[in-house]
Image 1 (cartoon, rainbow, N blue to C red):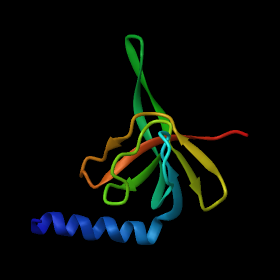
Image 2: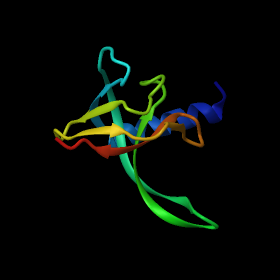
Image 3: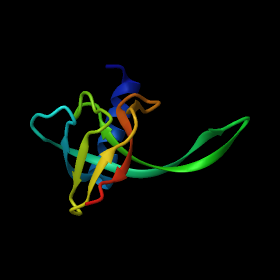
Image 4: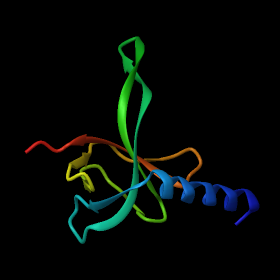
Length: 109
């Protein structure tokens, strides 16, 4: 690991210690739920609308790749608040590569 990669890893770890919340990640394909630490955020994304586009708000969960190897659309995440959410789009890697970015929506009973 290069010095830059090591610094990024330490920074990412400190973000999860300071701003992370415990969650239980259940794969859509079944299997054992995985205890992870997540960060919930919102971000603006460019949404195509015909010949133009608009900025829309998107709720995302970020989870470290070292904690979760392969998140998938349809996975469910039980948050420490008691709320359960579902991953509604294919997860993508964050630009720096150490996290998965997963769009989610609340699971309605």
